[in-house]
Amino acid sequence: MPKSKKERTDWVITKGQLARWQKEKKQRQRAIVIGSVIVAIVLALVIYAIYDSAKSSDPTVLKITGPQGERAFDMDYYVDMLRLYGIQRVAASDERKSKADSTLQAMETNEVFRQLATGLNISVSEQEIQGRIIRDFTPPAGPGTEAPTNPATPTYEESIARFSQSSVYKGASVNRYREVITLEILGGKIQEYISKRDVPNEVEQVNMQGIQIDTAPPPPSPGTSVFTESNAEDIDPQAIYEEIKTRLDAGEDFSALAEEFSASTGASDLEWFPREIATMFYGENIAEAAFTIELDALSEPIPASDAEGNTEYWILRVHQREERPLEEKYRPALESQAFYAWFEGEKIKFSSEIKLDDAGIQEAISKALG
Image (cartoon, rainbow, N blue to C red; front, side, top):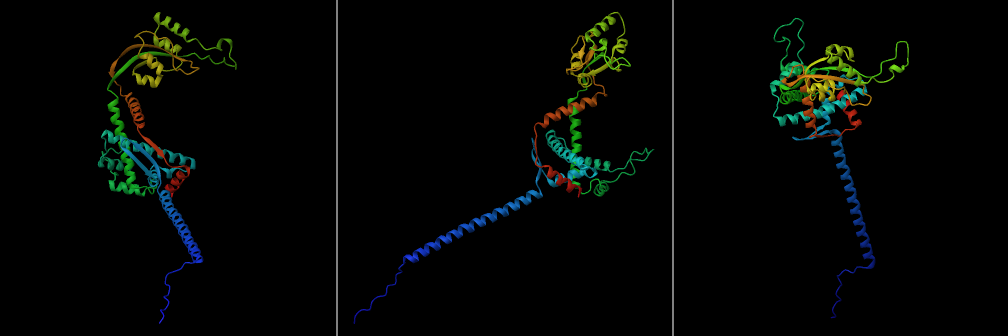
């Protein structure tokens, strides 16, 4: 028998099949690419939506960096501070904006105090916090009350209840209220510490007399509206000085001459005062002269100011200059000056960044009032 023909089992790919397969492959690849792009876009939109939602619900309002590190304040904190600093008592919109700005400044100052207190090892006790809160919510004693303790003084718990019920602080957090109280006490402690440290009990002082003269031309004569030739020019301060000196040398009293020539009604005997007070009251020129001129000598006319057009001058006579105890009447001014100088020097170690535009501030005000 003849052998049967063996069937061919291998595949034969025609040109048409190959073309169709390549076309389908390209379509699948295109679909995969398009699908991947769509998925990526959707994921990006979801991520952005989540980020934007988180950002808008709790953005950083203020960031402060100092020697003790960085601290960021969010919108909730800012809204609470607006309530605690009295935004609800402000009616006009422009005043509310001003209050909102000053609250941001207070937040910055409070954080500076907090960090500076850490560096100075100054702290506030729980007893001090509670005592201050009780005092804030203790009504004034009635007239004629001489009792050492006001019978209307509430407990700490009663004070906190009054805070929570207060329309002035409506919606404010008790914890944030305690924090503000703490920082206010810290500020007072820091100022007291710096005052005692930087203001000595004894300072160099001078005891002197002075005549303040004004060389501006006198006003027109009564009934006229123009200057005459005799009053159109400034008076020569040197001429006044020469006349005063001549009459003093002749034995006339300084106080009497001061009353005659002085442009002010102040006393000619300026008593004892330190240089800082001389600068505050009379200006740097007068302070410099008071602490450098020869004792008991009459000074040349000293301009009260270096400003253009100045017409006021001082003629001084210093009797004594020595280290002596600081009078209590001058201490508050010197303590305030010392603290301000120290604080301004410390503030340059801090940087702050406000991350809130006008729209954000208005949003915070609306929340605080809501």
